[in-house]
Image (cartoon, rainbow, N blue to C red; front, top):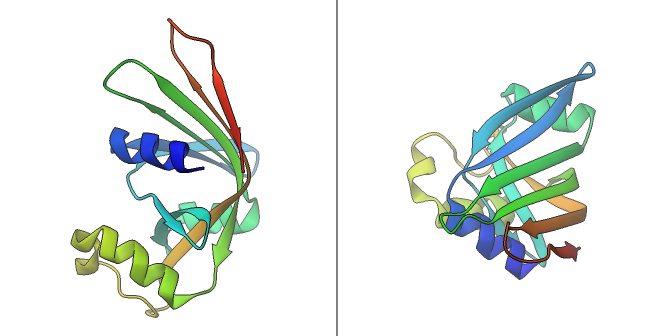
Length: 131
């Protein structure tokens, strides 16, 4: 999992896909953290993306690094009901504190569970991670 975290962190921006009534929805994201041994992402509960993950937890993430490698990650996004997880995330991304406050009823952290990630390139064999 640490390799996947480091890869996504280095990319900065990744693309998160969710499902809404059978239609894929993709948007750029940038938050990624490790909380109690789980890879986590953050958003607001008022946003459609959170509503989509709560209704259908199946997500996919894709990102490309500056060195030409890319990652595809599939997982179940599970809401983490712990204010400390939100604190930890916002400590890692202090600029988000202008929009989010742990315990505000909006700040949400989702753990990526049952995950499979594959890091690929045109010059090396794919490397797979499961967590």
